[in-house]
Amino acid sequence: MDQTEQIAALRRMIGEASRAVVFTGAGISTESGIPDFRSPGGIWQQMRPIYYQDFVASAEARREAWRRRFAQDPTLRGAEPNRGHRAVARLVREGKVTAVITQNIDGLHQAGGVPDRQVIELHGNTTYATCLGCAERYEVEDLRAAFERDGDVHDCRACGGLIKTATISFGQQMPEVPMLRAAEAIQACDLCIVLGSSLVVYPAASFPETAKRRGAKLAIVNREETGLDAIADLVIHRGIGDVLGEAVGVN
Image 1: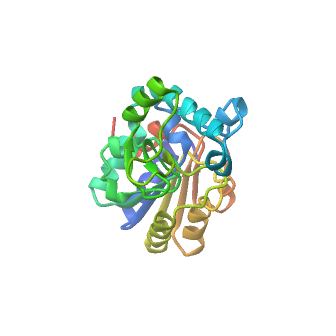
Image 2: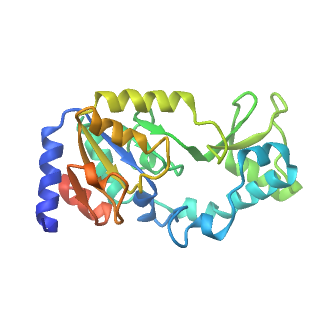
């Protein structure tokens, strides 16, 4: 199929669905200028990730983690939802999509108009922080001011626990509630649309596979090949914004 036929096929699949789920990875946010982690030239090729166990055990590792996080601020603050995010939000508003399951940590789905209650963040959110002990929430800007003043992020004012961005680090247990919510959404869906995920990070990548094996249609839009291309009903190796925007009528 050429691009026009592929987009028409995706449009038909969306039209026939009544309980679609969208599953997104880094590829949808790279179109907003946010670098990904795993591709050639990605963040993990430039610097070694800080494991959760090291963050908890080492004050130096925590300072380095916060230094890296604050260094990302200009990119995160400058990123805006793109055509792909807006197209997903339209599908949610129209009732076609019941949930957006995302591996991303940038909050761009919410910024693009998807209600927070319908976004399932498997790997957390880097736009705020929480205490590892009591889950007290902290705003990144407040922590940045303290870090610039004192050279460190202090412990939780409520319980004395360690404060960490609300993301899931390497070696950290996956969050129970989002994983359960994602499983429920996948079990109920009749279409799973994968946008910008290489589908190599497990257990998150198991959700689209489960949807297909339970009888749902599977559509994948990703510039590169994925591990599930062979079982998908539709595979489009093109930009997400152009493809989904055209399919749902969003500029």
